[in-house]
Image (cartoon, rainbow, N blue to C red; front, side, top):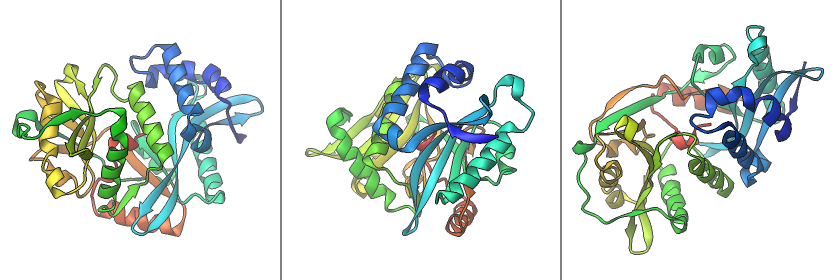
Length: 318
């Protein structure tokens, strides 16, 4: 058995028809294939993303997607490889192919200079724990929209010209955290492409709002209105300073509108304090897990898991 990259045309023909039921959501099969291809052909996709298969001869036994990111831990940098869409054809399940595939990938990643592998588990975190992945703090929150103040600032819908300001807000906030995934221009392109696809929130309405200070972006909120859940789903927010941070609850209230709740992943450190009292619970899906491959990554995992502070936005989700 060996690992090798799968060309997109082969992946679309041999894998995507089987995974559509799991990950296409409300998208039609052809739309699911088209959008997956857009990610592969994007600037980020060409440099930092590939589909990989475990083969025996010419037979595909299992597959996954691999993404490259950089993680800042304190003043250091860790090369990170994200793993997603782990799939074994139904007639081959129960034979250990996925376990063998991921073990081989971890060995190869270490040889390639990767410090840490990570993933977001929707089912059976224990399966990944047996391969060396550690479950990191992963919680969700829910709060009543009417517990948020009504806007005393002018709120605007985010447009394409605002993204530079959004990136500045994010970078300022990221500096205040003990660790975070860094975002290059290509990562921002990938994030925006996935938002346009709407794959994270099917049947919801993308709702991104900003507060301006003169011509600059002072604060922003990214998310989607989901009437079927009577909720606004928060993906991320950011701000440039304490004064701008005070406007975030009003932005969330505006985003929720007549919906009853604001829900989402619990924001990372130094940002969650902005929210009023909320109901918090462990997530059963999208559980963030990391497999340290080098001593530096092992030190980061120990500190990050022991502090019991959530460290990722849902926009980091693979």
